[in-house]
Length: 631
Ligand code: XUL
Image (tube, rainbow, N blue to C red):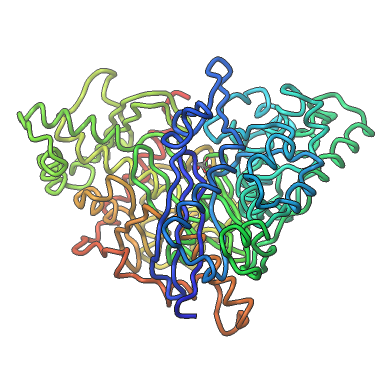
């Protein structure tokens, strides 16, 4: 096995990346095709996509992706890549996008021959629609309304599918194709793939089923019953009695037709879905028995690239903030996403996608630099003053102050652009807002911007974490949340005191319209990992650590290749499990934890003070303040 290689693909919006690793998980090679660099002339793409701005449509040409796969392999061949050493492959793709295969596709895929380029053999004949909607598309406003109407609202849809309706989710996109875009082409469609199953199909030369984790990004899949939901299929097909006024027979026909097109899903596991297609074996030199394992969505693949176990959190601090966490309990909310974990059966990935992140932090930083005449624009220098103020700040500025800074409209919580500042008055137990337009000193904004961003993550991850039983209490959710005597008997004296303080000062804690069960607000993650641009700033990261109070550790991590690496690791683990059995190899989490090259990627955050308790008021204040924001 020592020179065996495992391939991971990452088909994202702007590029296709292929990474190879050895069986010890060490990196071997990376190859890239950049869609703008390589195809902007031919396909007219900008940042990898085409758009019709007036309609809010954003999509990618499927033919370009096929060409990109060939180009990546050609670059590998030119580099002398040892294709014959590749034992297995898997990969990661942008989520939610859909590819529409024609009835000719199976024959065309199995007959691919090396005499002519792949793209000429498949496009346009193998597809009905020649484009795949992209996750940035926002053309489906009527469709998302239809999905939520069908089941009674956003929270109800989240309870079934793990998410409320979103423009980009595949179900609404399919409904648009079937009812508005081109019903005829929809009916002619033989199969619908997600981008992940499309790429997997292309490489294995046969149409593959949808991978179960990625299928949770469709607003169609019942995450608890592990099957497509008939009522939602009827909406996607445009044949819902409630939404479309269809009769029973039409509903049944619409559901049956879409079920055919989607097929059943490929369940979470380590089973291979086939071998590399003879086309690629012959043209590039893969061995015929090189195994293909199901591909998944990019966010799901990201958690595969890290030794993230149950109750671990990953915070991605970029232009926007994304939080991913692993949990063994599904606690759905209309403000975030729950998807099935792609390799750990009975585990889930929670995903919070905030709009605001770096820009809000930079606005405060710029105001500070202006006030103190700082002109150093270097990456470190530009943050120096901000960091020194943050390092010396007291929690909530030592006077129960908290601001909310949304220079962009926010999804979590659902709120318009705003800047609001609040102070909690202990004497009369009231949260009082500074009059509109009135500010406290910009130095006070420094701690407040970082604290309110981190507290928002703490407030919303609590209900999904399980080490205090928070998620299990969902079963007890019918009890009123202040009914502490019944629920809180299991909690430590310390946690009970915390909850009593929260309750007496702030009432019932809630986020996004959902009341928390008591343990949610005393839950802590085991490990927290930080990635993305702002994770380079140690002062900001440390403040997040103080607020999260992780039980085991805090780490900064280099994740630039995570999606593709997730594919490499998944293919390696699956290959080993098929060869040696699960009992020997162990489940994905345990296997990765044992074999992960911590030193290559991970930098522990040292010297974090434990200030979790000092931020209990922050949780209460944020819960109250958010209820006052304009939607
Ligand atoms: C997640 C989402 C994006 C894409 C990016 O819901 O839409 O993260 O997966 O490729």
